[in-house]
Image (cartoon, rainbow, N blue to C red; front, side):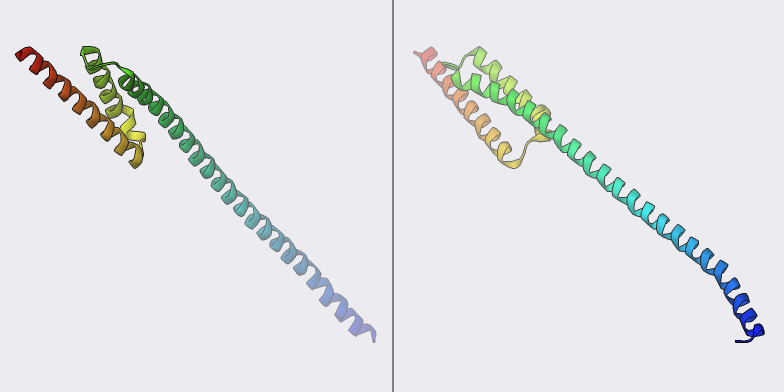
Length: 138
């Protein structure tokens, strides 16, 4: 190769070197930015899942508390010897607990069971009222 040709190749390579360097830097910056975007998206997804889990946990705890309260009242009603004024007060407490927080946290199965229990207590109260009327009429 002659000297002019070598010089031409040196100049050509000398020009492409910085262009390739700048292109490499630009590709690196683009890859970094894409990685940061993906990392940010993953962080947002994890935060969203964490918030949803926390919400479900709080709802479960509210449901548990509500169920405990209503179950305690239902147990007192079921164990009460015979309907009287105290029994009526327990039923009213049960109804107020049921129509309070429980309405917000119950599922369909619990709702149906609570309605059936409520109707059973009302039937029992009605039977007792009828029995009292019959005894009073005697």
